[in-house]
Image 1 (cartoon, one colour):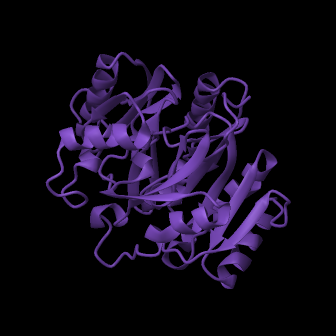
Image 2 (cartoon, rainbow, N blue to C red):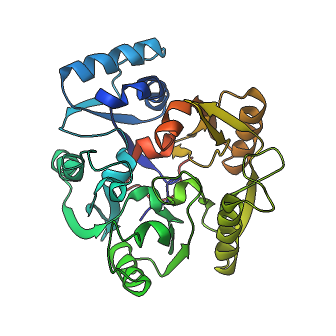
Image 3 (tube, rainbow, N blue to C red):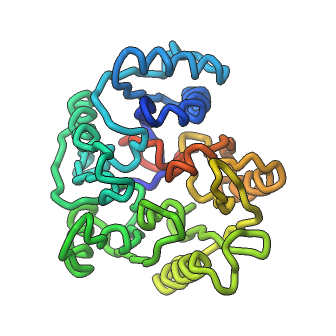
Length: 339
């Protein structure tokens, strides 16, 4: 499984519609930024959705007719393609797609949230790209997978072992399955669910690789909603850092330096949910000039030589995720890191 910072062929989005239309401005910004650097595939549900998308891209200062934007009318249910979309692996010099089972995060957002069309998206993508698709009969989402591009996957057992996803599944089975499906030599589990996280602990909000040997993990501070000494979130992050360090991976702690508010809720300014592309990183911003700029500078240090963009994600965060959750990156077979 290639690391996210390696060369990519494209990034994919599923455009929000219906009850998720509040997210459209976020997607407009993503669709303005990404084509500056690489190809962007946009999946839409119907013509009205595509018309709304084109208007949002224009409003954000982009060009919906850009030569790097490719439009696809595939039936879909939601705007979180990181989780229901393809998992790409390289085998014998060729890409293959894995279609893991998807059941809308174990029903965490309610029994009335549809997901059957989302569960077929990897098949549609595989058909378009003419890439073989392998079905994996395990419920899991790509947002809970962090790869170093060499030999390691890090993930949260609280997500994969969730009985609403995989009842009766054991860590021993999981380690065997992950090594077999991804060709990794090492599986590192963390455990714990941050307060209010309905994904039940996706790793992309907790621990992110920035190179093959280093991960970044949040650090609660006196300025955060989570108390650094006694909160459950601080314990999740601290325990994750300990687990990762015990695996021989260097840890950098990223300070949570503020609190954001949206929709009557409060959020820690956790910037982990970034997406890496060819020459750029897009991270979620919290409309806080001080913490946003400090985070931008830190992320620039994590990914030197790349352009760093912050996009306001309060509406997405309120709905349960961020920039990484919305995007699904398609690796290139060209080897080596992106420059």
